[in-house]
Image 1 (cartoon, rainbow, N blue to C red):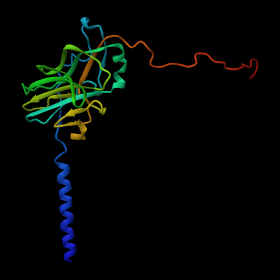
Image 2: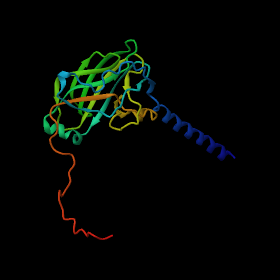
Image 3: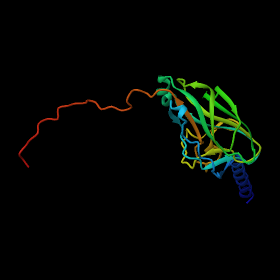
Length: 231
């Protein structure tokens, strides 16, 4: 009887230990439905920016906003592989602006900085701007020539409260939900229920890739004989 009693206590202790270990890392962030009243800047371009040829993004229209509703400092990013960017690199194209959705409730967001990394440790571009509620188009002071590397494109923000980082309704693309939250991670790693993509859209300025993305080979071939006058 004594052995059974000790075993029961040990099982309870192990169970409690595992539940505590999992709980403290779950649901760090949460989402609210965005009261979306500013949707005028999506992928539109002004007449003076006709050279914009593409938009690098994974998101659809804004639908939700993410945060901790407390003092916070974190970054949100979209990842684009070197293979995906290769046609723009080949043509010498540049990123001239980045469009992001910020849910700023009565000045909760106190600082925002556009950041672009070539990998998780190499910052290649940064630019502070003053965020407003809704879609923000951050025009790069110096256009960024697209390199022959991966790119993490996004922004870091500091807020006193609220849910500042805009995202779509999902489903998520693992490339579209990167975060820096005390370390590099994904939104779904912090809360599995938040299957969204950040509203981050990098506008590409330059020339269109001249070569076809598909082909048919051969263009002609011998199809054989045709029998006529038969059923």
